[in-house]
Amino acid sequence: MQKLKMIHLLVFLFLSTFTFAQNTFTLSSETLGGQATLKEVFNGFGCTGENVSPQLSWDNAPEGTKSFAITMHDPDAPTGSGWWHWVMFDIPSETNELVANAGNVSTKLAPANAIQSITDFGAVGYGGPCPPEGHGIHQYVITVHALKVEKLGLDEKTNPATVGFYIWNNTIAKSSIVTYYQR
Image (cartoon, rainbow, N blue to C red):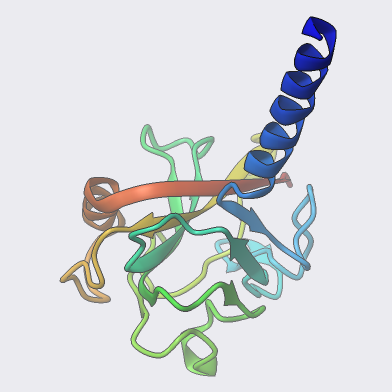
């Protein structure tokens, strides 16, 4: 009898672990791999990419999510504080995907009412990888933040550090993917 109880307990724990693991807040991309390609790379600052933001999708947002934010940051940039490549916020809570090139504000592919603020390139929208030549491999951390507020109360002129502060203060959960690039 004791052995049967132990088997039941182990089966329950296994199934519970499997179930919980399947329900975590997860970010993925159909277009972005482990290495950024010229499709995602910035076009400027000496780089000659297409500057197309990747397709992103997320699942299992936590209860209480009222909006989302997307950030892309290069912590390896030789600035002392990294480099902000993409900042989008006030993404409606019913959204769970950004199509490829949604970071290009002129295409109007981003969700209605979502705001893309300035990056460290000094422009709004997506700015792809473009590390200094010979500086080695840089990592680009793309994060979706589930937020407890519908709006951050900021606009497209807000600098990335300020947006990051507001995101940090309102994040319920976050999920990231990392891609790498060097030139």
